[in-house]
Length: 253
Image (cartoon, rainbow, N blue to C red; front, side):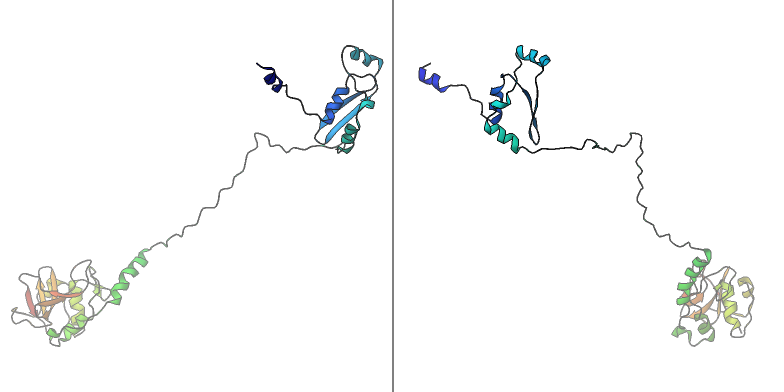
């Protein structure tokens, strides 16, 4: 390696600060000083060297001669802020024991509207309301002005009711006996008994207002191959085609 290159690689020099000069003065005799670096600056405490303390100096422990401090170091020490704390100051830290339970209150559950309970009476009213709104129909033109058919048409829509004989509900013979009673004709209550009244006529000679009888059922002939009757449970009074295969036509009155 050349001499020029060797000159370039010199040891890095440490920066020079006021503390550097203080450290360079260590080794003198006399008073000793302790230098402490704090968050607010430097604190230098001095105390006299006693005879007992002089012994460590002889063994290589250096002391600081305050008189040798440079003016720059004194100015740095004078400008450093002083932080003081009251001797009775206390620091309080809030602690929670490990067995302390944490109380958590859940959010209230949303209220759900409860539907109104349906009673037997309300169900009956619901069934009766639509029927009541559609009760009655005009007599068909082919009835030829029959008083019996005009009266019977008033009850179109009334529900079938086993044993019923009023506008609240009819069965087949209850319906015929109720209608004929309004024109002054009294009929037996059952369909089998109504078979024995009046005069049997042929289908070709049947007129609106005649009875149509078949085993277990009775209706009123409306003309033009139609009848009006109380069919069966779940149905209502209605005009419909004659469905019986071989019914008996009976003229009453």
